[in-house]
Image (cartoon, rainbow, N blue to C red):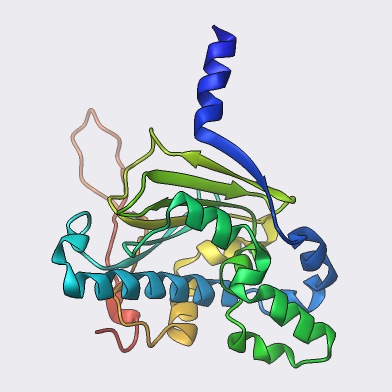
Length: 251
């Protein structure tokens, strides 16, 4: 029976090696990159915006493309209980092949070009010219989980601790996205500031003011509430509030 279960799991999960030595490169350039940790959110929001552009463009000729998720959005979800920050969009999503080809090589994101430019003496402020993108997540996270659903494929989970390999698993039990991508950053112990509401708002105002889609921040508040004698005097309620007005220049 155990053999049968293992065989079944292997049908859904595969382990892949990165096509470029991510950890070696990150270690080599870690000192200057530490100065730019805050750009990770800008890069991931930019990626989400690109994904939304793609599905919106497809919908111009085929409105059915939006049936799986009619709304176009970007959600930022900090979770202090689990030390995670989630960036979710309802963009085009990725197929299994996309996950392997696009997230499996550091060169695809522009990170390699940026690192090589640094080693040649380029100014660190030039990072915006290279589209470092997805791999900037590892500036603040020691583990990244990507859940994604493309209209032409099943829902998959990509996961890696940047240790030289990553796994791709068919997602048969998790919450179904309909369409889009959810990136969960498992933050490093010294990067928990990025779970704070004010810090996130400041970063969006600073780096993502020209994004054309609504960005919402999910926040958790503690409120006082009158209750009956047989209930607790104070109850904690989770309030999920859309705060897109603080995102400047939204359409």
